Structures are given as structure tokens and as C-alpha cells.
Image 1 (cartoon, helix red, strand yellow):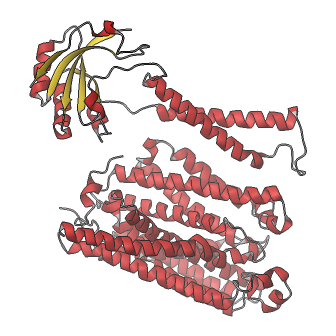
Image 2: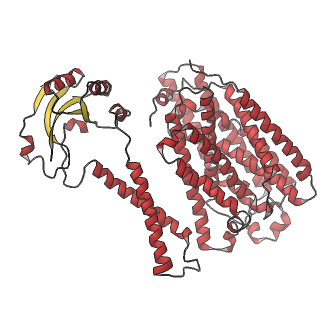
Image 3: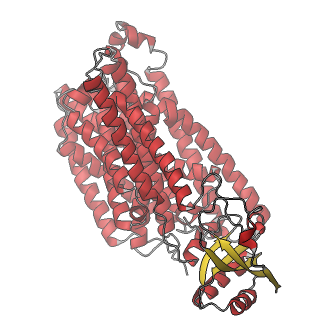
Length: 197
Length: 407
């Protein structure tokens, strides 16, 4: 568990958000993420995020599924438990293609879901810190990660000047965190300071 | 200022006339050497070659109008910047429709029963299976339904193109735009429903499946339809890239190309799905009446074409067009589009030829020559149709949405 300090700004208009993201990145602040209630086209580019590798992983899972199915069926039907199905050859690829297809889809589907959960650090009983509940409703929540060099007051003022309607500083655990944040007081020992612009 | 007026470039003209000249020479030589020959095999080669090309090009051009119609029905906006290209390609439908009709008339009234076995009355009377199919497979029904089909394709297609050109008149208000979209939706709905009744079901049965008159498959129409749809999409991609290279279509970007690439990729896979579904059930059941279709194709003289067809229409697109980068790359999309237009022509080839030609098929000067002739016709009439309307429908209600399209 590494608890970090974040400066959080809430925007209520995407037309304000986009220039703000540009300005804040230009000023040298490290934006940890922007939480939005719906996908915003082009925000990933604005934040300088690279393309996800999830599809490459999906391709590898798919190939694994395909070879698993082919290997397993061909081993069973040509070596382990040879049977005669309507006089068809023992190695009859055409009949196996639907199963190979299904396993390809199954492996890539389940594998990509689990990989996605791992990348987002999601699992049963894992709690995630919410920087602002409005991010699930109508607010765009920008989170700036503070380093040892960051002047918090300056960052807050900069966010407010960029158009954030509500600015505060939070200590938060953003990684894997088993527990209940309504019970676990330790995380909230540092008070949250609210500055209204 | 957007370049609205397309001028056919000199190089394009040169290629068009070159292909037309080569094609005409091959066609005229074909008439004298094959069409008027005493050998029935040569005659069959002549007519089945023409049948193959006229049907293939008719169906891929009509698939472009289908593309426009489904995009209207889906209220999709991304294709608005380049929608004049599929419209221009579909403007060639009347030309190929007339050619196809002439070929049908020649085949049926010329009694070329090597191609359509069911026009031989004597054979039908002595054939249990064919006499069961008599209500459907007979010249009267064939012609009536073919003429209706071609007529509706031409008329509704023209109506949809006219609706599209209407927006060039000038700015329209929100109320007018709503009525305009509704008009489009109604006509596109009529087109799509009729398309389902024709290309989606009856037309491939009549035009192509009846070549193997005893055999039938319920997958066949969808399979043919997918083949022509991928061919049509590839044509759209080719023309879009060509016009971009010439400096037109400033607002069609990689985002649009990416989506065309997705269409080609997805429907290539769907084509393979239908290809395989049709094959596997027949292979599994192994009933002689059904396997008769695959015997020459899979194990006989056509097996090379059969497998090349599968490789270039499925393996190639799925591997090459899978990544995001390749769908956004003009060179790769162009290359794949050329391969697929040819690949689906080859697919049609192996649908048409085994019936009439038997094991002694030829893929020689006449087949390549008529292919060149039809490509020349397609290029000539599409180029002409492109010059007749503005290239970019700037007053279309969805135009702005198309500009900011982002995948």
C-alpha cells in the first residue's frame, strides 16, 4: 500500500475540460487520470495515453484457445479414444472447426476480461478510492498526482484558474486495496481541504 | 474551398480505354472463335464467361447501393464525406443489368442447357427432381422475376441517388432536414426489404444455384450476397483511396478508411463463416445428392481454385487487416481491396463454371479478356457518374458529424 497525495479538480463542462487538460499538462503537472461519467472522444489522446495492448493479449489468448482445442481433440480422437463416427476419418478437421472456434472465443473472451480486471486492479472485495462521487453522474474529475516537488497550493490555484468548479487535496490509495473504506479510518487521517473557486 | 467537381484524370482514362480495347478484342474474338463455333463446349465457355462477369459486376455494384441504404437506415454519419463514391458505383447498375438481361435472353432462348439444365423441357419431364422444381425453375418465372428485380434495383437506386443530390441545392433548415432524413429512410427501407427478397434469397437461387439444377443449399444466397458485398466494399475502398490520391475528398480521413477496413474485415470473416457452414453440413451428412456440388470443387479439377479462393478471401484479410494500423494504412487497404475484388470474382468463377464446363474448364484469354472488358466498363461509367454530382455533400444533415468522426 502506497498512499499518495492528489490534487483533485471537478469540471462540469467538457469544453472547459479539454483546454484545461492541455494547459495543465503543459505546465508540467502529472495527471494521474480523468474520471468521466461517459467516454469522451479524444480525451485519451489529449492525456497522452498510449493505445492499450489488450487486443494483442486477446490475439495471444485466441491462438492459445485454438491450439488447445486442436491439440486436445486430435489427441483424443486419433490416439487416446479412437472411434468410428459414420466412417469419417479419425482426423476430421472440418468437424472440429466449430469447437476450435468456440474455444478460441472462450479463451480470448475470458482471458481479456481477466487481463482487463488485472490492469485496472479490479477484483472481488477490492475497494477502489473514489475521488469524487460526481464522476459517476455528471462531473469530470481530474486527478493530479503530487510529487515531492509539487506545491499543493499552487496546483490547486492553477486548477481553479483552469476552470475547475471544485478543488481539493486528497490522500488516497489507488492500487490494490483489500478492505472497506467506510470502516478503514486510517486512510482518512489526513483531512480533506476543500477550496471553492 | 472543397474540390467538388471531379475531372477524370488522363491516366484513369488511358487505363479505362486500354482495358475496354483489350476487352473488346477478346470479346469479338470470343464471338467468332467460341460463340459461333460448332463445338458446344466452346459455346458454353463463351456464354458462361459472359454470365460470370455480368452477374459478378452487377451484384458488386448493387452491393454499393445496399451499403448506402443500410447506412441510411442505421442513421450512420461517418460515411457522409465519401458517400458519393458508392452512389457513383451503383449508378453503373443499369448498364450491367441490361448486359445481364441480354446474356440471360441469349442463354435461355439460345437453349444453352449446358448452363441452365432446367431449360431443357425433355430432360425436366424425365427428371423427378427437376419436375418438382418446375414451378420455380422455368423460363417464364425466371424472366418475370429477373425483370422486376432489375427494374426495382435501378429505380429505387436512382431515387436514393436523386435524394442524395438534392442536398447540393443549398443550406436546409432543421425541419427540412428531418423530413429529408425521413424520406431517405423510407426509400432505403424499401430498397433493403427488396434486396432481402432478391439478393438475400431468390436471385442467387435463380441466376447461379440453378446452374447446378439438381442441387440446393439454403446457405447459398447469403453466401453469394456476402461475396458480392465484400467485393462492393473493396471497390468503394479502391475508389476512395484513388480519389484521395488525386487530391479530392479532403474531408475523408484515416478515420473513414479505418471504418471501411473494419467493414471489409468483418464481412470477410462472415463470408468464411457462411462458406464453411454450407460446406460442413454437407460434408457431415455425406448424402450423394448434396455432395455432388463439392465433389468437383474439392477433389476434382477445381480444387486449386477452391483453396486459393478460401486463402485469399479469408486467411489473407483476417491476418492482414486484423491490426488497427493496417486498416488505417492506405497502401495495405488498397492492396487488400484489389486482392478481394479479384478473390470474389474467383469465388463466382467456382460457383458458375463446374456445372457448365465440367472438368475441362479454362481460365484463358477469353476469361481474362472479358474480365478486362467489364472492369473497363465499370471504370468508364463510374468515372462519368462521379463527374455528374458534387463529390462532397456539404449540406447533408449529417455532414458535420462525419467531419468529426473519430474511431
